[in-house]
Length: 82
Image (cartoon, rainbow, N blue to C red; front, side, top):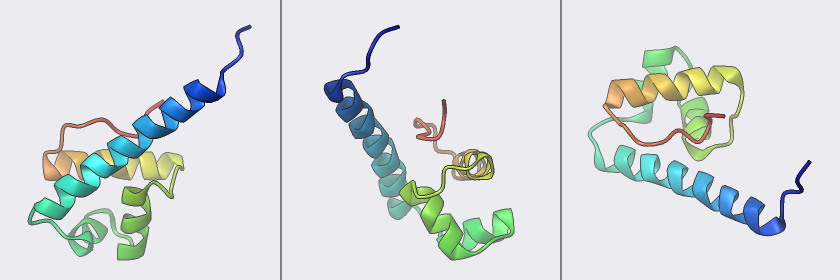
């Protein structure tokens, strides 16, 4: 069994942050709103913001993020994929 180094963890965290930021930038530059995405999935704007920020990591958040990507036609990388 191999040991994961601190450098590998740092790189993985950086990659996740870059994926989150890429969608956040795309979303900010688009005509979509958090209210619109909240209505799409039937939840609060605050929950949508937490998903986009990467604060939600549940299976439901993963499903909702995929829905956001499809709805907004975003084809970047999901930070919730495993």
